[in-house]
Image 1 (cartoon, helix red, strand yellow):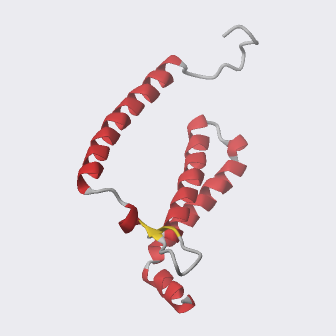
Image 2: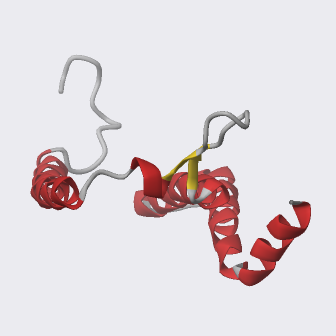
Image 3: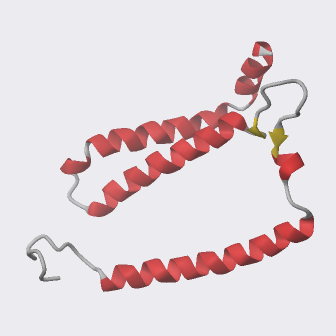
Length: 124
């Protein structure tokens, strides 16, 4: 079993990029006070979160919920996936939700633009 895990790591060395992104994001968060622009801090925090999630997903792929006994099989991506029709309906709703999310973020960015450091409490 251990030989197989080592073999998988040799066959897919590109999976090491996810933990690397996590570490880059974490290192950037320690230096966040030195950045002049707020966007750079956002990029590093996003790298940390996305790299952590991607590392977790890549480490357990294809098992979503490993089995702890020999009676029940592990839940994998293949045996818990919905049928083709359900997945196609889901992707259409995902695209609609993504468009609405992007519009919402754009509107919020335009409405709440810039810092509010000089404004006291109750003056917003």
